Image (spheres, rainbow, N blue to C red):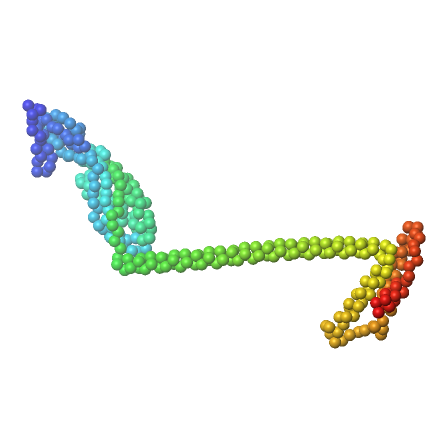
Length: 337
């Protein structure tokens, strides 16, 4: 008969009626009083009670409970009035304390959440309220748990749903946001201009460095080429002088030198008055023989010390008598005329 007994009916207050055999649902705790005094807490499943003596006084749900905290006004640290509401998540941890520690646990926790939220908002400025929303929720949860520990209730988390600011404050905040965005845009634009100028300056610097290095290399190469050209010309001139000296040292070398001087004189004399009208001529410009004789005299004067040194080093060799260069030139002129 006990197993076939119907489920206990509830009174108008919502509490089950003791019929001796009771089935307690999962995640519920039934607080039983015997003759008006706390007796025990029924666990989920089958339970037996004494009718008339035992009475189910409280039914506590062990599930997580969601409570909407009504909207309320709060003043921040910088004297801005806010309209704020939230959601509270809690759970009954001790059915005995929740039943006998406070008359209405949900109402008590709701009021405690509202007062704690007002006190926490009064410690923060308006800007920090929006930035430190998570820390504000954590502070409210800690404050509620410290007070609700004697009620057998534990607050799991608190979430702020909406924060409403006055219209004028909202407009000023919007203007502040727009000004901050314009400031960021101007800063970014100035930074871009600065980076562009720096890049252009770096490019010009590198271009000048490369151009100077190229010019330096060009000058070095040009100087090296000119030096090599000078050396080559000097070597060629030295070889020519050596060959000329060897030719003059041979037989009839002086006569050949005289002939070369005469040819150069005639060539130079033929170019007179071509570049300028002002001329400086010797008194006997038409006497080629005297001019050649004068040039050969200068040449013999310069070569006399070398000839003396050569005679001291090398014994003189017997040579055939040669006519003087001037006589030879006169004979040539006579034959040519």
